[in-house]
Image (cartoon, rainbow, N blue to C red):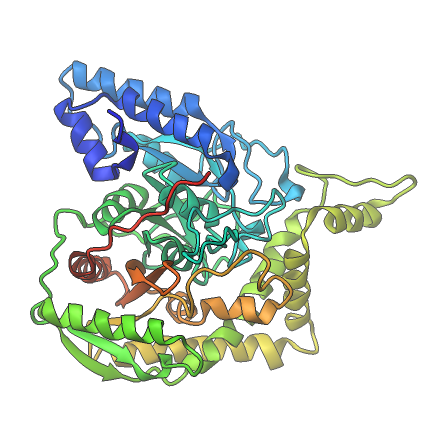
Length: 494
């Protein structure tokens, strides 16, 4: 079947179940695409044997007349932040190069239990710190998209889940895991014209996921469409006693409850998200998105999230503070890289290992975090940022009195060229301006493609929902998807 790699999770799952093709045919087709797609630099490790083994298990179960698992026959990409038993996990950093976990993250274990197979480990911004996938120690991930101006500038796939975004958009895999700390699923999904959802904080276990900012990190799914995101998230989620922040709640059947009918729902448009300098194309798409949701039966209301303007500065205090604590474990003693200069003592080894192993952006955030946690500045920065976080969460709680979900742009621009913002950290941080508030409040949020800009690049719309109400987020995403009719895909050049 020549176009098998154009299929998403649902089509592959259903095709394997009804015998249209075998799971092994699917795995072989995607393994071939992964091997042929090296120019995108999306995969750090390829595991074709893992995908084939899962496929053979699915085919054997079908031949025996057994009921197939929910994702049987579906191969996926795994962001390299997830520890995978016997397969190298680096978090995009030299300091973990060569680290091979002897255990499986809960999220990946859930996916294998659901029948999925692993095509490989996906490149990412180092320790998930970045918005363009330019901070990876193993080279930039390149978006499969090109501007329509005739040039061949390499574009950023977004970050930190840039490898996941590029691989799904480039048809190297039908879906991939991502993690979202301040927009790292939603922003890359918007940049490459796919869908991605960050669930409520605690829906997916963080056990076995390399930590960046523990009170913000949350795993989610990235796929071609809303239905596929729902299927994959359903397989990933669930209570885990090994994670103290895991929610002890049943996982809803999001796929079967999907509906694009929003009658009786109110959608909030936050006035504070109208930011000076936002491109007209972004604002126009936002207006169009509101019209699509109105057409789906929703009432559009204006709401206020007054502390939005403090979200980004609060995030860039809280996240680096938690990172400086989490990354203290990388010292060259037990695993990963070790630098031991001649005659060096223990402290010298720590310093040399971290100087060599951490990249510039990671060092920058560790230093910011250490500074804001230091004795003289803790109350002035960290304590204040936590108060702001509480106010932002309260803003959302008050907004829910007037609406059921919120519509906003996903990112303030389309994808930019690699290197165009690399020298300006503040400009890079602004990529997360629309995504960070939902992360600080721990709310479910999703990006779906809405259209193309004047240069032929994808633009995304974001839906934010109430805590634990992933269903409304997915339903609104489906309503947009049905009306946007987004079928654009990058022309193959790699």
